[in-house]
Picture 1 (cartoon, rainbow, N blue to C red):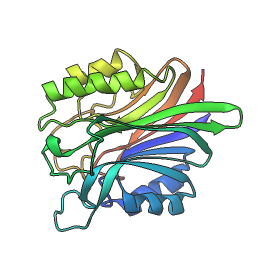
Picture 2 (cartoon, rainbow, N blue to C red; picture 1 turned 90 degrees about the vertical axis):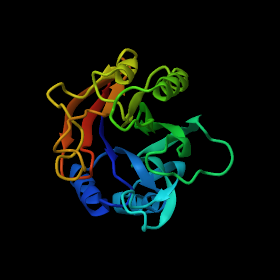
Picture 3 (cartoon, helix red, strand yellow; picture 1 turned 30 degrees about the vertical axis):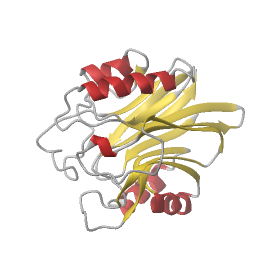
Picture 4 (cartoon, rainbow, N blue to C red; picture 1 turned 30 degrees about the horizontal axis):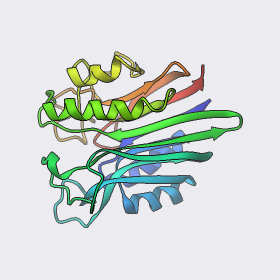
Length: 243
């Protein structure tokens, strides 16, 4: 059994709240979306965990403040246990220099999948994290359809896994369904949004369940909770066991 957390942390904007929340929850494994390069070192020290980071490009460390410093920006995976079989793949981009990300312009963002095996005693957990292609209003796009096919092809190479991330595609919609048809959606149905009502710019006026926790049949997920007051997206926490 492992205690698991996944959070879109919006760069360095909410570091104190994120660190405080995770210290209280005391997870065995943490996945981040919108992690920065400096954030990797920060959370390794704060959480006492080894972390791995896969950039999607270079962006402002405070994503909504274009005057903030720029740094590598992507996804991360941390654990207090042994991490092995690390895989870093791009399903959009991945060649040449990291792009300078422009908010709202998907042509400037690489999309990636960070995977690893976490070993706790005799138990092995294959974990993957991504931050998927965005559309302005949450509706499906041809770009999302192409990119989801590429992502699913990468995921298919790992027969049993735990997949988390910000999928930028609301539950019940076409793109989310492409994942839910392949993997078990473990977010309880009573949660209708993963946007923080206070910290997200549209969290009060629009309900979108865009963050996910998916698994194959090798894993059993329980005690799934979405917590507010951590970042602009709610923190996803769970207990995950081998089936």
